[in-house]
Length: 244
Image (cartoon, rainbow, N blue to C red):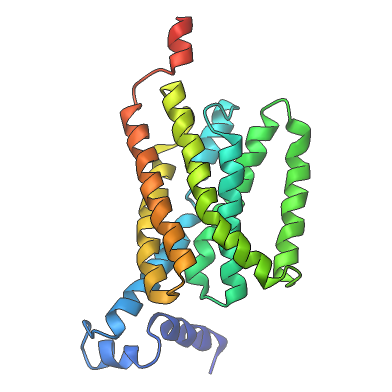
């Protein structure tokens, strides 16, 4: 068996675990009640993970083009990073399939870039690369299993209030400014859709209440931010309106 054939078989087995390929494809029973939910979950998880590769790219490009992170809350981004990085680390250590937490990992990487941009385009530019070095160190600590699982469990449990605070800060900032600043509609929309899908995949793949509740709350709060982006779409920030 060639290496390519082995990878193909592994991929098929991942998407169609157990005897699902035989039941759904060979026996032509695509709506098998036992296999359909898990296969849909696997495909959805892979789609979310693939989509997460570009989730915050519009946001990153928008900040780079304007050379400003105005309207984007740094504390909110830091808390958001802790939440998604904590979910990725907890899931990695728990042995969950990559399609279940790969998006959290890629979102964490892009959030690091956004935080570096916010720092770089501000008076704290000297801290941008120091922050990157810290993130690298923490990544190697998780991969090397140097952080106790109890600590990762605590961080995962903490992501629920962290998500509430992080999104709440951004929601309040948007309301205070009367604008969503440099927030990207595409990124916010993808975040909302991804969280909705993750509630389903978490129910199917993990049954872990910490993960499920986390994504359910994130869905609700991302929905509020999405509604703000749409509501404030053509409105000027209150501070700018006052100056004019």
